[in-house]
Length: 204
Image (tube, helix red, strand yellow):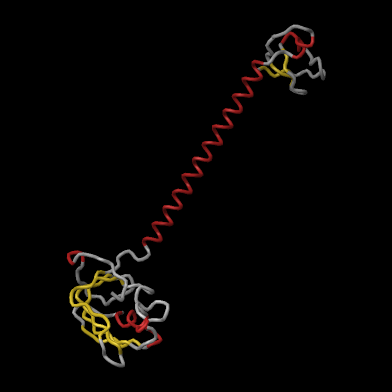
């Protein structure tokens, strides 16, 4: 076939009263000829299902189909500059030649969701982005909690620096000096920090 094909069963295609528009799906019967020799280069005698879209058909054929309705039979003249080029011609003979298509429209299905694929893709991307942000926030929160718990556990299990300096090992610190941050048991801190003389003790 010379055109992009979307295979649908005939039961999926029903007629409607509007003319053909971009995005519509249609069943057509067609015959393509060279305009200068009238030689047939392609034809289809049974229902042929295609979707209308810019780029899916050669420009002249696409323009000629727009607005046609179910039951219409017409001849579409395609000038050479709106036909096949050397880049997209199925055969070299079709490139840069004027063409004639005899077409009959059997059925049309309206595109009820134009642009829906792009919208769905955008919505999906947005949803994925939101989920990733939430997951990232939860991971960071857990790491912060683990870090705080680890620091607190370390502070609780630390030895009193004053007792350690006096040779009394493994005397667990009960808090720290608010000024210099060194860990002390309550007995060592007493009223002042032995290191900086600060007088504020923060319990664990």
